Image (cartoon, rainbow, N blue to C red):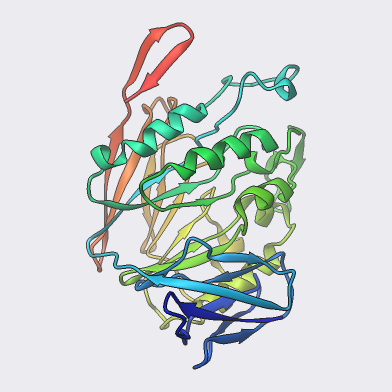
Length: 332
């Protein structure tokens, strides 16, 4: 399998990272690359100077073509961190006999749309949005369809990763993971169908961003493959360069022990709590839920995260809930 990467004028782009989900290669002087088929996707590395809305393609043809356009993110680089949006469709027939547990829904499609479209007012300096999993509540196709439609209206680029709920496919059965962790079973097929690759990377000025799938890693479905990819991906940047990790749960030794060097920060959710702690120089940022109160009684919130080229700083912004009637809730 081979392909090429060009700019919008048709000129070849050299030294662009391309991955099959295991190996990472660089395009040559003619913009070409060659890879084996390993995962269902081929993904290009968006850089601090070039990006593309079509940053991945199915690995189902012999020749692939990527087009990158110039873009110019700036320092300081601010992004909005959301997590555990748990969007659901309570009117769905698939949910009629389902036990909703602690809450019937975390958010509704209109609430995600409204939040994203008001980001220029909420975070005027933000240049991107990172959402670290449990995007939808039951992992159903109709939930993913509504979620992708909501994301399409965002005025900022949105980068997402999967959480355990995103792999439920309507099944809430419990399993014990390879690390003796009680969680739900997982099937990433629907996530990949609607949202594409489950691990990838890209660059912002002076910072490498790595996104990975915690749940399938924890279940042992593809942890060795993800670990191998992480080593190959970091092997394409200068050793010791700053990087951050987007992971649904806080990363442990089963991932970080395989990293050639440690991230400056890891952003996660999963626990529905608000927690920021420095562990041996890595800032672990576990953010609260945005559309309902967290389990530690922290209010609905999101983080505004700034990378100034040397360090990360944060502001936590609460989301005010306005009750208009028993059946109508808006969040501001």
